[in-house]
Length: 233
Image 1 (spheres, rainbow, N blue to C red):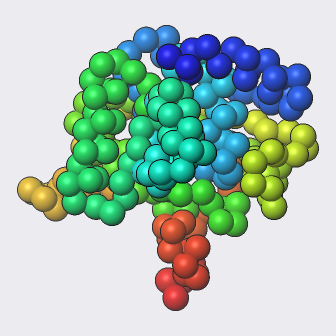
Image 2 (cartoon, rainbow, N blue to C red):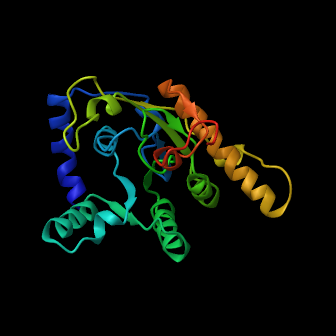
């Protein structure tokens, strides 16, 4: 896989140019399934975070990156697939189910799945409400969720499309695993399932906030991008 060939090279380039820091990597298991749940401050996160992890990290990315018919678009799609990135159709319905199945396949085969529970990049550097798909995957497979906090990448890439600045330094902080079975849930039927998914998701977001010190906004990042405010307007 292209990922395995490119990763050592990318890691050394990042170390030489940016000197990123990583803390708590021992929380990531040497083998077995796990979900790496990170805040998402910039496009650089998807390069800097997995470069610090010894194992292969499989990410989900919106299907738009794979859908173009031009030569550059096809090349990008091929590159992303080679790097272990899986397309996600965010229109819902059967497309969303297909994406979920791809993530389940990674975990059931004992792999590492990288997820941004905010669903999209933070538009303002704050931490936003998490989506429950991460929790659904964890409860379905029993895979632990490992919270990850990225620091510095929002400022380093602000106003830049591709190449982040060398300052501030980008830091990856890894927290202790959260076992999905630790969230018991209350109630019955669908209500219990929904409450349990939300409780586990909120716990993960709280742990990420502890790692980063970000201000938390109880709105989805996509809604904030459309003009929402913390009081829901």
